[in-house]
Image 1: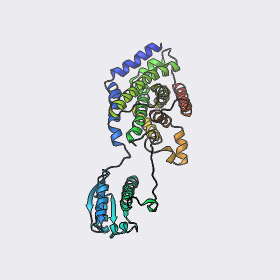
Image 2 (image 1 turned 45 degrees about the horizontal axis):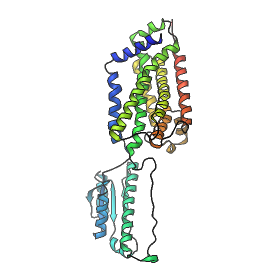
Image 3 (image 1 turned 180 degrees about the vertical axis):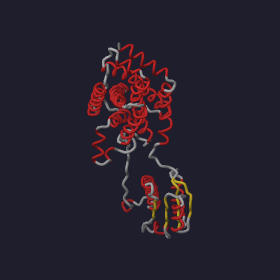
Image 4 (image 1 turned 120 degrees about the vertical axis):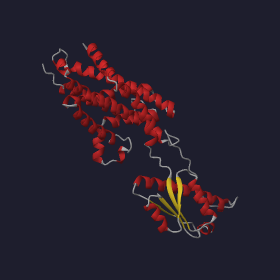
Length: 371
């Protein structure tokens, strides 16, 4: 009996001119566009400079900031009020004011003071821009100190602390390395959660559910026949994601593909089961789509895709604990970046198994077979 039900499901999918294209085109579009657009790496910040010193040092500092590729010099103002107007007009994001006698104070080792004013309407942009600018100025300050200390000054020279930084798991701080595995999870969630959610309700609208209800097909067998096609589609989608990540971004998991497929198999069952639960309760296709949209937005915002879970308030952390998307996203990033194995991700494994059992049991119980 299951063989004929599966044949029916695959025929329905293949006869639909849109779904097969969506299965292949959607992952490609997301993985080729989103990692470049969705990034916390802010560049091309508009800089307004007020140089009250007009010295060699002040010009060197300005050139160093511009050559970093994070800032564009869009305004040179004679005073602070003029520079502030450029921010109000949206022409500048950050103001750098260099005071008079800047070079003289540095040479005399009295210390130079610089004022930085950032447009904080976009708090994240202002904060990151301020951090970039402070880091560049700090690096320039180190160069000035080295230039001013005489060679061979011995123990009388200014003591320095040398810092050797090591960035584990993402040595080049490439934000795409962090985003691509998470986007694979999002693609899998949207396809394997959305398509099952409209599957049963579509049959209700077409009238084919009446034929299934009068057949000897059991509830569990019917739900299983609905799950298996999307389980296979999920494997195809995540395999496409692996190929795109390798071919476009050069990303290969530090762990094993087998570990990812193990977690993906459980996660697809969980998210597809949720989709079938929604489809059982929805009376129309429009109703099912609105319910799916609500849950998907909630899952994505509380998954850690863009903002860390640890930065959220306690009540949001508790809600995120019941989010299967969050657990699988931790798995993907851990295996891709750190090479974690299933034993190290045992908490996530148990959570995903629990979600899969819960949602699929609910899907079987909520399907009311009428004879």
